Image (tube, rainbow, N blue to C red; front, side):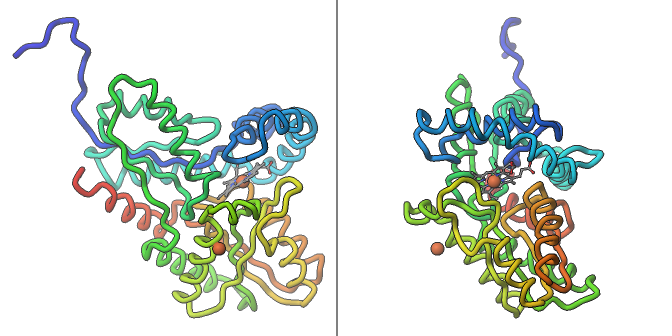
Length: 331
Ligand SMILES: C=CC1=C(C)c2cc3[nH]c(cc4nc(cc5[nH]c(cc1n2)c(C)c5CCC(=O)O)C(CCC(=O)O)=C4C)c(C)c3C=C
Ligand SMILES: [Fe+2]
Ligand SMILES: [Fe+2]
């Protein structure tokens, strides 16, 4: 049967995979950082203070001072390919695209900023993707990260007449593929050092402590990842939480305080950040630059920062395995 001449064009059906990470400014300058922080910190999943109270604080004290300070920090880690988080997430998508071939279209998007989730879903649909796996790149579930990706995808689909079918990659905090990739990456990282660290420290992004009591499983999943990694490596792994924001009590112990104590005790330390699937400001500036300086100033001996899984061979092997499993029945 032939289609009427004015019938919309229909591309051949395909499978889409959308990797989603947090987002990052377009440039390490106060203006772009302000735009990024305004969007990120206005998300009610991230700051759970009623907007009538929070927005004046955000638009006042925070967005007048923080963009300049954060831009300075971003400048220290910016690369020729842009922000590390953007460059690494793009590299992960490109590498997976090469592995999956024509049957699957792999794209990436950011929850805040560009490439925006909605426009990227539209581009996948325009290419014929009527089934899309959304993959939030957060190993540990957190309402402030994982759930907000689901919210944004749902909000965008509300406006679509013909919605694609969706699947979501579950959190993978205790997945053997993730723990195995971390263990392989840490073993290689430790073998390349010219010292044997007294302490192996897993630093996770912090959260307000009340979110734990409200039922967010993030804290337990971070602890579980660290325990399984410790079992896989056959050595202790200390846990701490970094990047405290605001005045509320955050999960403890705090990474900066722990590094200072280890420094005072004259220890040597290797730090990893297993909750981040890509190196970013919080790892490269806060841990590898500032954390190292704090540790050394307190009297610490040797310090090493072990990179995230990024687009490394164990990292890509893990993403490939997790995604293939979720695509079962689709490919
Ligand atoms: C990996 C999980 C993350 C959780 C959980 C998380 C919670 C969270 N973060 C803030 C405030 C900020 N985070 C910032 C940067 C940032 N955060 C994550 C990840 C998690 N955040 C990443 C990957 C990044 C790096 C982005 C990059 O561009 O490289 C920032 C911006 C930088 C700065 O000004 O310090 C803020 C602010 C809150 C409030 C929160 C939970 C309540
Ligand atoms: Fe954060
Ligand atoms: Fe817990």
